Image (cartoon, rainbow, N blue to C red):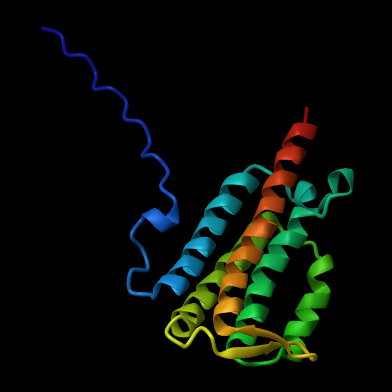
Length: 178
């Protein structure tokens, strides 16, 4: 009697963060923002895998470099949450904003910056999610009107917008390889 080898198990199917049951202790709006950040890390890791450091700094067909988007995702998350908390930007945050257009970091360094930014943001989001989401918040010198909830939701939608640009640019970079 011959025994055939067990069939190779296929990898577990991908389950989006909002369906994983995570962050259940956070009120719904904050949980959705945390899930958006989790999805962003998943997508950034997947779609930038295999890109060279030179590729992430290139601007194929005039598109904005992947490196810029990664820097911007990390740093804008901090800035938007500062507004959500009722603060104004510090000199360090303004300097970091000005520095987003340039740099020579590796892909690994930029992904690590995003991960650290999201890790730091998670606790802030958890706290903000328990506040009255309709509380007024002013953005910038002009104190443009939003609310805690508006700023939280903007963290999610702004991040996803830039992740989409990373995915598109990464796909183009791969296609240009031939």
